[in-house]
Image 1 (cartoon, rainbow, N blue to C red):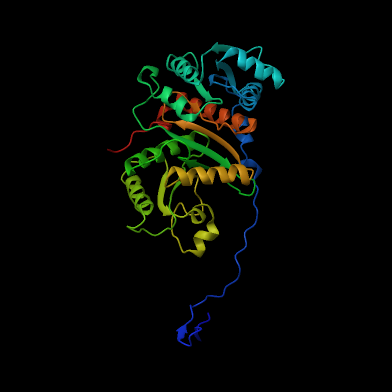
Image 2: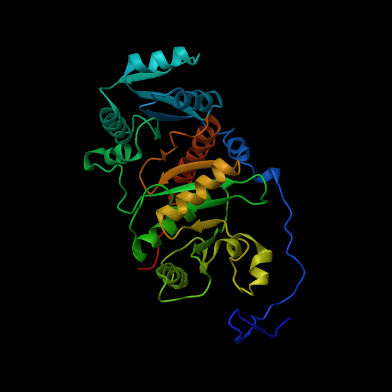
Amino acid sequence: MLDGLCSDPAGHVIATAVLEVSAPVTRQQREAPEHRLEGLIERCRDLKPMPTGVVHPCSANALAGVVESAEAALILPVLFGPEAEIRRIADQAHLDIAKYWIVPTDGPEDSALKAAAAAGAGEVAALMKGSLHTEVLLHAVMQKDAKLLAGRLISHCVMVSAPTDARRFVISDVALNIALDTDQKRDICQNAIGFARALGVDMPKVAVLAAVEMVSTKMPATLDGAILAKVADRGQIVGGVVDGPLDLDAAVDAEAARIKHISSPVAGLADVLIAPNIEAGNMVYKNLAFMADAQTAGRVVGARAPVILTSRTDTPAACRFSAAAAVLYADAMARDPAILFPQTAE
């Protein structure tokens, strides 16, 4: 530790800051093949392909994701969109869609409404977003006539596997809910726990993220973290272990948590990251996907049917992983609905 006195340019004596000299922190890349998202597809091998309404797949990228997901025996696609345009795009991209049923529509809004109605009627078991805006699809899903709402907040979850990390984790909410109160964040926590459990995490550890790990009344995200941790203690969030506030490095890196002297059952071990707001969540997700070559599998949770909410810029592989996540989620719902919709204390 070094300290002392020095002079500023005007000759005034000032105290220097105290500096701690310690060994440099080093972190190794820790790729773990068993945590790559190909494992989701492997877990679907003994499950039947899921009849899936693909909403307005009017781009080569969207159609390629559909074809790859179908060839992997994950989905049985029903395409909702302008038939001539879909066939033209498929021909230009050399994609074989001859065996897929196409429901003709007049545009994105019509595609979304017809697909949501089909899901509500049980004609398809899931929905997959094509090349339309997210709000157009979700507006149709949330229509009362669609019969897809389950009486709780719907939210977006994405499982991420970065090539340099030894663990995969879920981030929420990165694409759907904007201005949230603490009660809505409670629902997002519960939805994310159900999603993680459906994908094989028995007792998810949930980190409610903030910029710091200490509670401050000047930083609302830290208050949300502390409240949600206590809400979980009271049985109002179940099926996982919730703690917060935690900053991102302490949530995912055990060495960072050790250096910061954070005692927590979640720190360094988080399976689920709850973002303080949509901007932060979206930036973390896209930074990992587009700048760190992470694999992703995203979907909307909380509705009566799985909604595979891929981005228009997602790769066919991301569509395939997202389809596998939806198949596993639907299977968990069929086997034990309490995994996804548990009874909580009120």
